[in-house]
Length: 394
Image 1 (cartoon, rainbow, N blue to C red):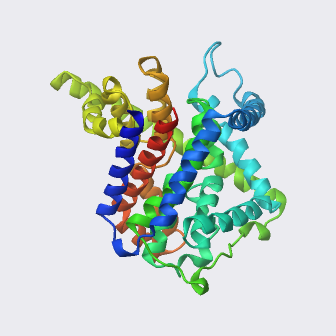
Image 2: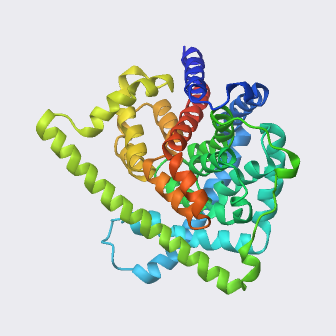
């Protein structure tokens, strides 16, 4: 039964993408088929094999160790603020981003990350049938973040037509940066975080190639990336990345304060007027989508509410809700919803992306703002696609 529902889910997701395709005749079906098979194989390897267990365990252990290192710095500055037995979210989940950001800066400065991003991007371009720049951008987004990635391609930004810019933005919104992965792993199982990152990478190509199909000629497929770090000394770079990490932590913290408080107020209002919370009502809207993701009928409303919360607010709020409601869900549902939550596909990301691009190119920033809702539509379909692929395996 789960295979039948999963197949139906895939057809619906591809159908929804096909529905708003700009040029259906240009869609390349062979790369789509190859990437679906590749996603299934990768999900099997990561979730159902000893090799996958070893890989994910190594990644989780690495991030756990990094978080331990980060906690030493946090304890030095903020020691004594937390009461015994308490673990403040800002100190334990968000502030470690500062240390992870510093490590990313070091790897960027010594040219390890640019090398990895370039050659993985080149390899992906052979599979997805898209340009080298698009493939590079997808890998870079998963490492440096949805805003910072555009700095690495700013020389090409003004030369990109809207359809290629759409693909770059879809990848940026569908992936999550390495600096924030450790924070996710404190709230949901690491194996689902890693699996989602890998699946979303291919899912972004698939959905973008249906919604916005095009051909890239070799002469316009510029891959050269602009690395500002070459102009900086090591300690200038380190200071910049540390401050960037702190800004991300503070911004996410501020967003959480606002969104959690707002949701609490809205939930109270709806419960007082209608007898049910706003999240519960949203659950009914998303319930059909939860069903095609393979979630049991008895859990679709609750799961749909968490999925809707992620899109309306952000993934941190939704992950916190999932952690609180974990006992109400089966392990299968927990896995599927966890994979769905690992992306930046929410309304606030439209503003973040358009603002990041506008900071580098006023004209292109306006282009991104114009296709903002279409961009969110595509990125949410990527999340659905990854969750459905996982439903075949769990």
